[in-house]
Image (cartoon, rainbow, N blue to C red):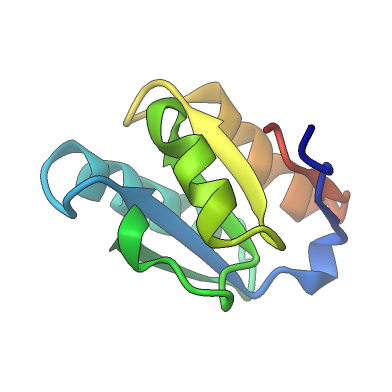
Length: 109
């Protein structure tokens, strides 16, 4: 069983929107997340990268549920937020809401 990773909101400076190949739907999702973070006035960088190129710099990894285990293996110290919908997924909205409120976030994997 994997240990659940928790981070305080003020510990999050980099969110990585990870995907399989780095194109298409996931890029739209990453751009939506960037807009949400900016609108919430959070001092957090959001980048988009293939899951195979994840590094330990990531505090939070937002990734399609089919790639979540691979993301966990690449960055065991990051909070993993799996999603189902590339755009308007409730898990992504919940992440931004929690960070905006200053609440801790917990890995969903």
